[in-house]
Length: 155
Length: 207
Image (cartoon, rainbow over all chains, first blue to last red; front, top):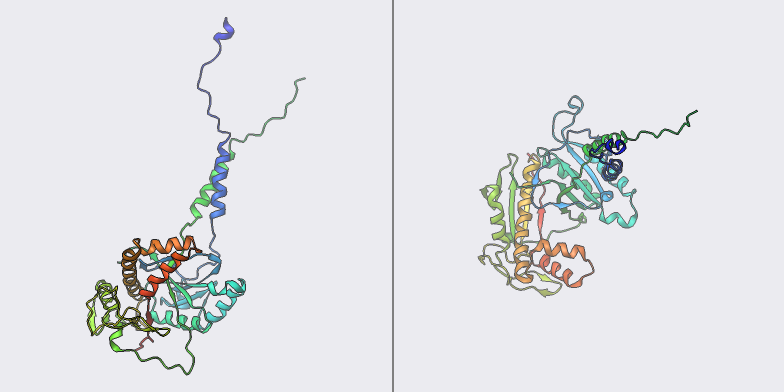
């Protein structure tokens, strides 16, 4: 019977209808975990020093970050590695207390003692700059600090 | 007349669009968690504060000059030898400990140092003082801090293994997971009390 003979025997196509679902799932995962950098760096990305005794910084909302490094705009700020960036502008050590107080106003009062200041400084910046900032931090009683470093063997 | 059926929308390229977005987020995502060397600053001393008199032998002086050279207890030293020297100093145990709330802590019975009389009395009296120049590179400064903290970790780790059979980081980790556990808390505090981390930053020199 020709009716049966005509039936083609081929590989059935793999059903890919669920593929978009899988991809969307992955997509949502990455969308949720992604954090966009909220401040754009006016400095060149600091080359962090290496250290072995590093601790992870928990509770991102309680961390205020101070960047120290070389300015991208060398004609305006020079080529030294000692420029300080607070929020999204270049500042001086004198502006640190105001910055900390501003950061504090963003969290509830009970959480203020747990706030940490993370200092992201370039390897080649000078200790003097760090110390100026540290003195200012001490003035406003922001005593928990973390010197940002990448974990790794020292070299 | 042929019946018109609603043609199905071709969803074949949806996967492509989703992939495109997926790749975009994959590339922009940064998973790295911020980490760093944590330190606690000392509070601002009151105006009329008189610093206590500390015996010379209980201070371990580290100086870093503007050329990033190290001077430890008056001698030049390479950064790789710093940890060993610091351990020897902290763990010396040459005398009695400080008087803690009226209770003398007595000699250090867990120290394995030389018990030399010219070095520190007790880990709770031993002070490491780091003095750097304003022109010192931050990288070197942090390396020194790291080595000193490491010296303390080595000692704490040793004591923790001796007393409780597990390394100190693990002990701390299990306490962090279970904050209500009183015995764990006591263990962690005991180790920290035995080797308190006393690293002070002296006023920097400027040329």
